[in-house]
Image (cartoon, rainbow, N blue to C red; front, side, top):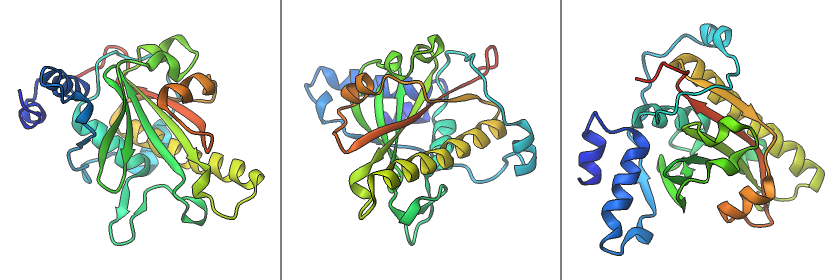
Length: 227
């Protein structure tokens, strides 16, 4: 099955598609050449009104293990920190001094991927399931999606160490709240987390000394509500 066929197959869920792509390339020795996958365009209509989403926003620590659909994943990542002004490349979440220092990593059963807002694509950084490293709580290892917010301190030019810590945490918080509101509007379960083994996860993701894990956030369908 080709990537295009997988995206167009309604029976295929998002991370099974990534698995199809990777397994299909293994035999040819090209698996390591798979660098990115474009997401479908985000849906811009039909969502819950903002005030209702605010009323519905809450944390949940139980998740159905079913992977999110490609369209939901696309919508979620765009809402988190996607480009909403193509002319300038500016995004749905603000960032101090327009540093855009927060990278969003998506960790699933199929691997770990960095979200590229400019191309609305996922770039693979790790093959295989490392979800258990995305947090210390039991549900993290089986939640279909764990988002990890990483600050690239090198982008925060002319900032003191104190300001880097402050603004990196603040900007990650904006993104996490975008995710909360999208999940409320889409009926998804979500919880933000600060308790992460940053050293172990950073090593697994190949992060450098200039990169700092700020927060993580687990997302999935509510238990028994998978579609």
